[in-house]
Length: 210
Ligand code: SAH
Image (tube, rainbow, N blue to C red; front, side, top):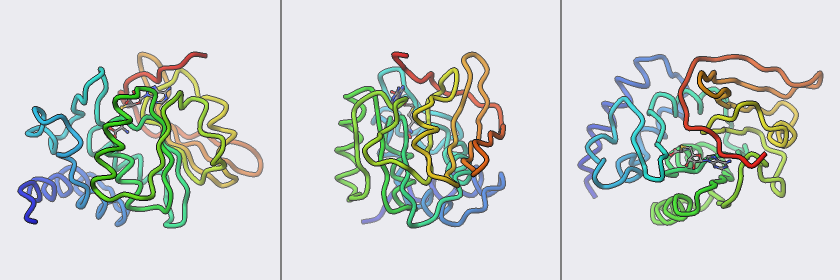
């Protein structure tokens, strides 16, 4: 079926993603393919391909397209990777990951958002995304360790369980901070964890009991 939003989506990828230096072909083709307009509420559909985050209900947002691409590229993913996402939200980032890697495990603390994402991603035919409703600051231990972890809400500091559930040579991208936030790339090396600041960002806070 003809997708009336295809032109907007390809323009988004050209002007917001490629023009700003994203090079990973797998990230670029995933962003050309995933129908972002289906992940925003119907009354926000005209904003789906804009250069900004969009409200998705429950006080949450779907991240700006460039940030989705930037974080995904920073994970340096391989097809056989197993990835944990904290903050399913709309499910858009989950779909981007599922286009690139073999298994995606995603945790969301707000049940209504998770259920909506589960329904949409099933309808779109994704079979490699596994959902959990709960506090993702504890990770998802049963399926660990992970090759990569992506956190799409900001904690004040990096939750220890996420560090523990990363494989040796695994990569994690995570926004950290309360008022001002920095995006970090954490890599697990033999000698320990290496933490690199990537860029200043703004995310919704990670809701956590501890
Ligand atoms: N990746 C999402 C971005 C959603 S915004 C997308 O592509 O749409 C961040 C999400 O993190 C919100 O849905 C919020 O409810 C969720 N969140 C906040 N704290 C959380 C926690 N402790 N565990 C799991 N999810 C959490």
